[in-house]
Image 1 (cartoon, one colour):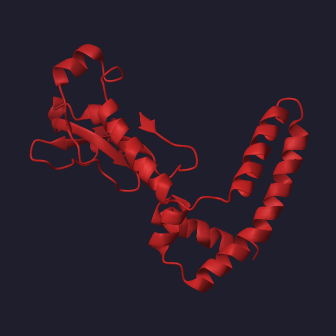
Image 2 (cartoon, one colour):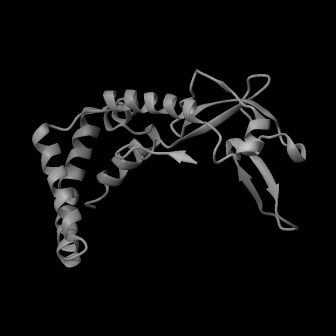
Length: 192
């Protein structure tokens, strides 16, 4: 189970766990047979202590960007066994991740109202058309790609020219540094 917020896809959240000593365990490896492939998982419920797996004692929110919630919530494995991991209450970690996302959204550079309004109107109109007029939607997508191909590289050149530090760019875009660098590189080379 993971959490996402529209517009902030690189900030995927999930329940993280802690061991009794306060450390965050690495992935649990599952040997699926005699091959060299081992499935791994970091799902919170696999840290139940069975089959020599580590036993988590607490959970907290965590995000793909590296953020970890400060608040920990004790894990009751007996209750997990009774309720099932899908029904177990993980609302505390999720609320903490939502607060983290509110902070990310607050620090992200807001679009001017007219641009945000145009994009919202376009999204709503395309949603209305997609079932009845998919060719029109495809044509609109083609036009949007042309706009991105024209202005993305121009903006990337200005950003590189102004030497916007990657941490600041990531914050302004509401994404991770890795994703911001990748986006900048993508747009810088889009026209070439």
